[in-house]
Image (cartoon, rainbow, N blue to C red; front, side, top):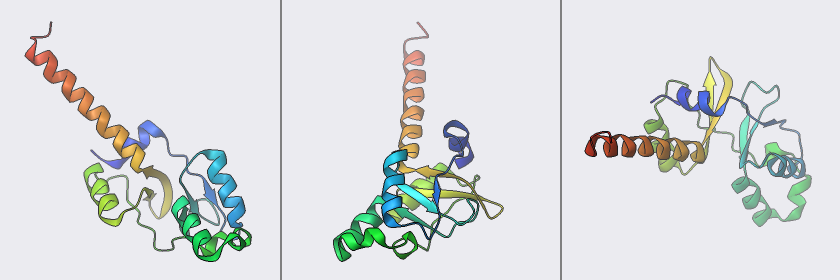
Length: 144
């Protein structure tokens, strides 16, 4: 199944933050939207980086509270793993597992088209297994 299927069900909204926003503003945005990562972008379409809760915690642990006044560009991950709408969910799961990442932006024609989290992948997989279980149950019981 392609990633585009996940985007159709969850939507293509991506919360972004400018590279010159402070880490404190970033933390507030993560909390406000109840999400684990923000795409760092000047214009909301092109990816400059990604910043996750994990990046914030690592920066706080190494540099202390002073990091909250720094710009998010100083702590973001610059080498962003992305996928395309045609990437399969199985491929995406493998990348997430191998690279220990939980959020992958979806890019179409060089522009941000959505974001997929590990939670989105798990939710889809559970739904797929429930459907399969229901189908097998109906088959076994003869549709009764």
